[in-house]
Image (cartoon, rainbow, N blue to C red; front, side, top):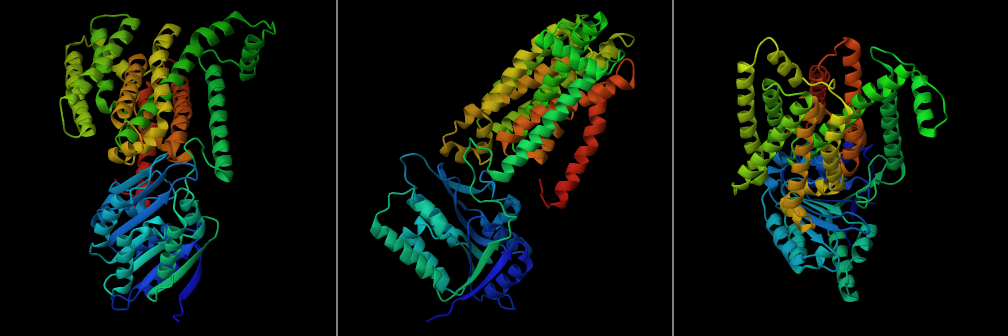
Length: 573
């Protein structure tokens, strides 16, 4: 009887020892084949994390990387296999945190099991067999040991690979707990179950296998993703609640400070007493100047800052998610350029403030219509055509804006145009607020209602479609909503840059990359950020510094910090 070689490791505390053990199990000193490694452990012990880190540390190019995943106990089951194994590093496999069930490399093949349907094993088998015939340093079989072994072709091929002495195998073994969960989702008869366990045993006891047993030291997160309707369990939920509480407290503090500061300063305690009296009708009397300043002057400005800050943040967050590009900002489709052209044209024509806002908004909408119409004529990649069309439309409106500035009166009109383009909330009035609130809130509402589908769009169009997402409709709704928000924000506040680019990154740093959580966080952070910047602008000078200048001074260094931070992690664009 063969004695199995097995060693237990605490992971990730003893990661270096585990890597040395893996290297000695798989390869001889001259780099030739030595044996196969089977990594086992309970759910969440870090098996797949270790394999990904080992591949990177040893600079190995996998011939194939097959994985079968279970997202949640009551939700859909996802199985996927990595096809283009020769380009693993280019696709980002080694930098993807697999514990996030919605973050996969872009070359994944996905199979989805919905209610009343079966896992398409024939389709999966074809992909796996093609993958297992590739050439490379190693073959990785992640989460092997489930119902896929009932497929004779897959099982026989795995046994052939174990008995061959050509390419080492790294097998991440599906433990008993995970297998029971899998079997509970299938209508498998007893004879098939017996056959499955026999085949598992044949692999486990194969003479070429060397086992590494991982025991979690508590720092590896679970591999099972929660239900879409849940944030998380235990400590993670507490941390999220705490962080949202901190963000909410900062937001309320900035609102109070925004009411307090200005050319007519008001004690924060007086502000709290005033609104408490108005809310509960206590009958306390305040000076008429306080009512005028708080209600007629500062309240519209604060509400507009909240609308614009949250709107630009959500728009930027949405564009970054839809286009899968962290460098995308709300003006990607030309809405800012169109609205800016409209505002400049209105100033040149001598329109009133309301006329400037309406004209700016109209041309912002026109830019959306032009982009959608032109891109609809292109049958190629829809996302690429949207971006390219947006660049073209933006360039046209920018050229028109330059022409207007050239023709404007340099004494009166040109300074007004320049000041408007730098962004400000000085024109905040209840009328403009009412005009801006409807499209901004409507756009934010649509995006928040669809935010969980933004996670699925990250898997790719085909994968999301197999999961029941109407990709074209969802993407169109999100793009139109985000562009509508952008056009409205620019029409009432001018061009305020960097908020839609930087705030989404801050949000993800605070609460993670799950859009179900990070998008709501962006609304709070964006509002707080613009309130903070506006407070600085109002205190700096009597007339107020244009907000676009301050957001650039704050946003640009922070974005440099983000680039350096991500670069140190080894994450490439």
